[in-house]
Length: 140
Image (cartoon, rainbow, N blue to C red; front, side):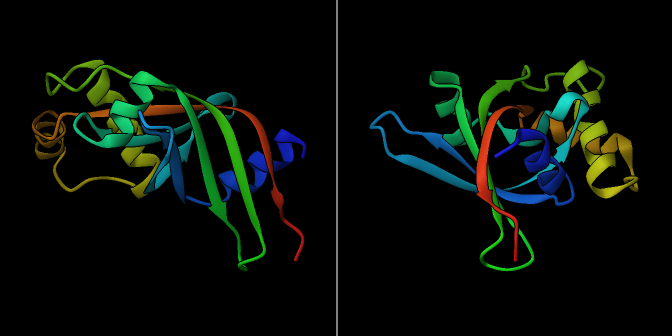
């Protein structure tokens, strides 16, 4: 499948399932919200303590499954995951990336100071998925 066509399908949506690889080789799946970025990169807000974060640090291969309007429409994007630093200060670059992520997915927040503090308290970071190939079915 053409990666450009797959990304057109994926960027028209916001929800999917990200798959990472556990230390024992089995997949670990997580429901996530993602937002598209420049160059086809897909961004996800995650926390430092989650299994997917640990898995990506060990093995950066990730897959993102996105369902379409029917059960038979889907795309799987395979790529490499890149992790930002963990948010450590309400005004660091990671928190700025998380604000950009939030705005792209949800619009404006009612209190950005509270949001900034929560990102640090939650030990959040950004997972950037760099797509390399895709497969699936988009025809109905």
